[in-house]
Length: 100
Picture (tube, rainbow, N blue to C red):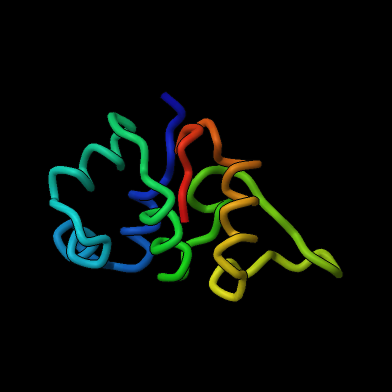
């Protein structure tokens, strides 16, 4: 399974896995499995991480830029646009059943 760097995000934000689990509306065990790569984050969890200030590049080593080469701010995208980008770049991680 493809690795992610959600642990790096957690460390940068100085939050515990327990706090992240609460923000993602899941258990600490689920967060641990996502961080370790044992399970895939859902679209909803990826979107929430992006809304919390994570970037696609930070989480998955991929980057998306908009006009002028500036990083895309996912929090400002519509759900449909965010789903399209996630499907395009992160489909391997979230699978074919991505839903907004």
